[in-house]
Image (cartoon, rainbow, N blue to C red; front, side):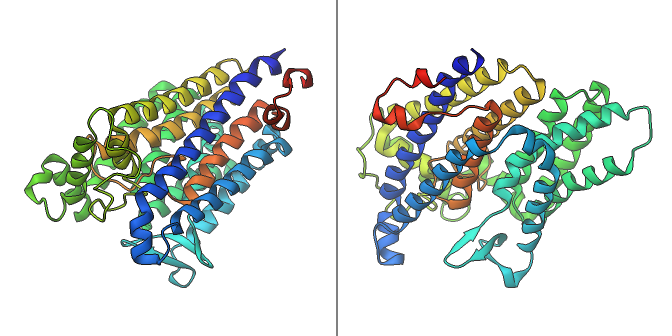
Length: 382
């Protein structure tokens, strides 16, 4: 009965994801074809690569049926440590490459792997376990196991700062804070920790000159419209030009080499210009639906750990979308966070699909996709 009750929400959740990825393919091509033709001599360069990433992500989602939540519980810290090791390799110049001063990618032939994208999701369950274990040791000294687990959680955060990848660092910090809140950690310790984290985060914000410049640009982008404020001003112009219904798909002017990162971090601006307020609203509603269905599936779980893990994964996905939209709309300082399932990017898209796979794996459901695609009555398989 429980499986039958969860199957429809799980299918709906996954279909929203595939709808976002399909829309992403349209928008990646629409926003990149001119740039791709000018710099890669092929208009469909980014489209074909994104299509490959969608296929890989879909395979990851399908593979969730072969794994279990219990297996993840058993190997959660080894998996986190393995990904941290790959993150560490990005700091070695011979094995990685830089983009805009950040060294986040491992070189794998014509592609780049960004291990930090996967950390954002795989750090959730270990964080919850760690804070629960602290609550058990609140009147005792830390054991060796707890110390090693704390190192496993802190090390990726340090590497994020060294790369640097302040956006991923922020996402991880927020998700770890959420896990601390939902765990059995005493609220007094939680509040003290949040206060310390807020002070440290504020210090990090002003520790680098480029971060200060971004904050100043956020406060007044028109002060330097041809340099630091250029990107966000072009984003404003895109939304203004879109109006209620937009210019129509493919008709954006800002993507014509005016708006930087039009097919990546600022793809939401192109959506606003080509589909207008209507397209922006529908996109937001899709993420809201993703959040609503994800939390609904979490609330009916019989085990608290599963419920919190599903909540964490869903919140991480939607939080990134919310932060990206806020940046593009000028509500937050500019930061390199893309729009989940829509923006161009292999590591990002596959890691987002991994988060979906982890949710389906935790639900312990086998979705009969073959019957659904063929229009058969899939309820009989339950």
